[in-house]
Length: 305
Image 1: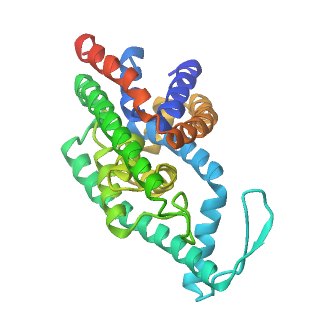
Image 2 (image 1 turned 60 degrees about the vertical axis):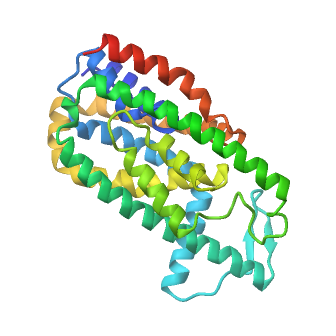
């Protein structure tokens, strides 16, 4: 693999990882077009790790809040009565509001754990069924693009409808935690984990299916996006741990410099794509990607082999 090919794959991974178009599927299609059939799966996972770093940096404040809440659970510390807002200013809370926000953070942590367990169980099954993802028929992957497009269209319709109902009822105005901050409940987290697990299938977008799962079960659009990407952290780390034994194969097949170039490109493009997608999620515009996925999937099923 040349450095230019690695950069192109890294760019594709960074863009496709967060945009709901299936990064693994597009990497497979690109490798097919480039004639890079010998590239090991772990190379893809290294690119995923680069975009994982983009997630951590983009959501660093929320992740820090979650880590602090986790350690308060471990050491039995009370909820803080002062927090920093989005502008970095310290805000004093009354005890009732502080407890509500602390409970919400704990619910978020529990939700990530539940979603990860479900995703991991499904991922193990998918890995056994598609034991060698490198040899999965590219036409099957392109069919997954079309399925992802349909899911995005349906979830967008449902999400907009739910937003209209909540706006009409005005039932979030007096709650201590806003709808955008409210963590998914335990059953919503299980459903989101199920959707994320389905996203491990060839050609199915993980981010698209996970966000759609959140919208299907009534989670706020902004929270569905935030929860989806933070919940991807243990999923991606788990995939890396399962395949880390093949690291020698990656360095032997790809090379150090192409690997570094691909990862750097994947990180930069991933961060920019994540910022762009979060704006689209808040606006409820996920169905836009169906306009690309449907023709791309159909053309792929016809011409690729």
